[in-house]
Image 1 (cartoon, rainbow, N blue to C red):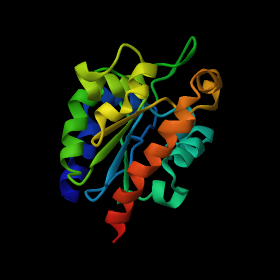
Image 2: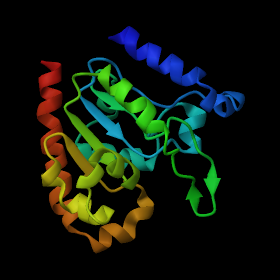
Image 3: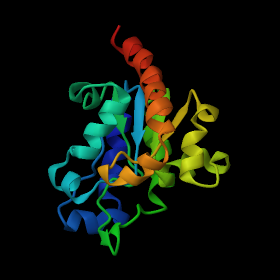
Length: 198
């Protein structure tokens, strides 16, 4: 299974659609192994993650790990967590922030990657792009409603708002998230990791 995962990543890296990234010296930013139990599916790496090769190595990642109820060493253990963004390359800057991930990337590569990680039992869906793709017609009218309806998607998926500190207004307007959703996320994650390390 490890060979199958490596083969998909090699094919992805050398694919003509990613020639622009190779020309810039970019490597795909992701993590995982055949024994991973939880998939973190966000938008796309930012410039800092692309340059360092370390996803979620910032204030957003610190907050995400606190929500998950885990430490850095657990989060960056590919036998526990797969980090599979909707695009593995920094898409560039737009007028109001990073550009969105390419819409054809996840449909092409995610099914094959996840098939090579058969022990994943929970997909944490961060942001609207991941939620629209993985929840398809089950997502609500907007991100807030989807996150508030998180129980409908358990036990396979758990939708989240992006943990960026810039989302402070959203958190101020939605105190139920910290009070209810964050503790439930940690409760879902803990037994999966306990089972993985027994």
